Image 1: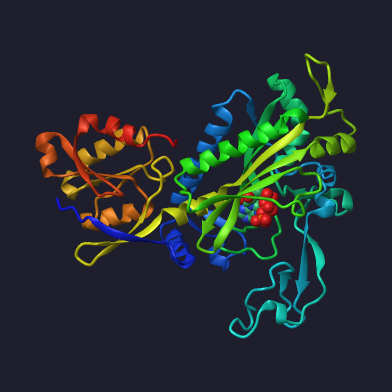
Image 2: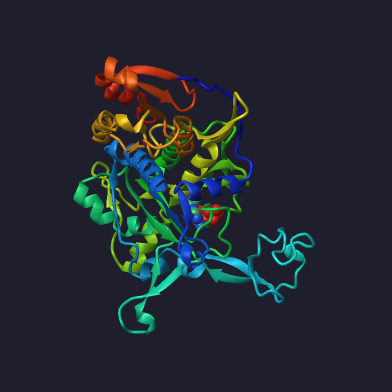
Length: 449
Ligand code: ATP
């Protein structure tokens, strides 16, 4: 078998390349495509859902399962509407918007230095005939039950953390946790973004993985530092290098009025540095407000000092979709191969790769023993089987899907009981005994970090 070693690769330059690969290979594509799509909504196909599930599983493992001071939660998407009054979202969760009197489009008042969609080559939006800014609430509203009155109005949650606060007492008592401890949840959030854009980066429906960590006021700085470090270590373990990952502390005028400090974790996308996660010191704002609005006591008593206090909250809030997008951008590479060919490869960490191994018999005649290998590997991982077409092309398809290992069963395999295992990045090939294949792959598909 030949080895077609890669020369230097080129990274992702234009988002269009990635958008097209994602649609073609079934990672991510527009929702309701057959109706022309719906702005700000995306579907994750067979490869995308695996990538997303793998990322969520890693987060859950790191933030919840490996710790005895964090509990998990899966709350409903719709909460009692008073929740969003208490949280301040009904009053304050809005962006200032302007309307164009000529084309009737709506723009965010802080994003006017962009090409006008009607005449991109001629003017910026700021030069259009715009109205004065008006606040536009970003929460998505819905109605419950049959009646049409105001009492039936409800909201799709704008962030996953609010139910964590309203469930705080129940979870603490049920799990018998003492302060400090945290509650974590992964789930959908909805925002009626005026300008969804940059692929999945700004969507109207997206997934957040949030941790609210409750502590005493005397320890809030300590826990803030702890979680900032933990979260940075997580992003580094996903494979993000220092050239693409940085933190940015909020200036005091950027902070929410209740927040003491906030740091964004930013990733360098082809469209610039952008936030993928926020670490916030939310103080006792949320518990105090819910306590007030619900008329329920949410303070705790220190068992030793008997001090009664409302815990402070350190929050880590990461966008799953934004992190998946960052992973795809970071992994994407086009390499020139010897012989004038090139290959597109997604260098995803093996623990995140949607398919862990592809079983590729050299000929359809070898399907039976190759299928037996596939069945064995499927007991452990998501595996793909492909026996059609030229082997080089089959490798390329797996490179593009980010599959770390291809297992080829050839005519010698019947004689020596071995298969060829090709590694995605180096394209190095190893001859491995079929009986040792599972342990060979297990060693190399080790979990992150
Ligand atoms: P931005 O300023 O970019 O709108 P934000 O500061 O409002 O984001 P947070 O409310 O802190 O974001 O939400 C935490 C995380 O949720 C963000 O870091 C991001 O990863 C994700 N997120 C927020 N809004 C969206 C969105 N519209 N689409 C996709 N992910 C989002």
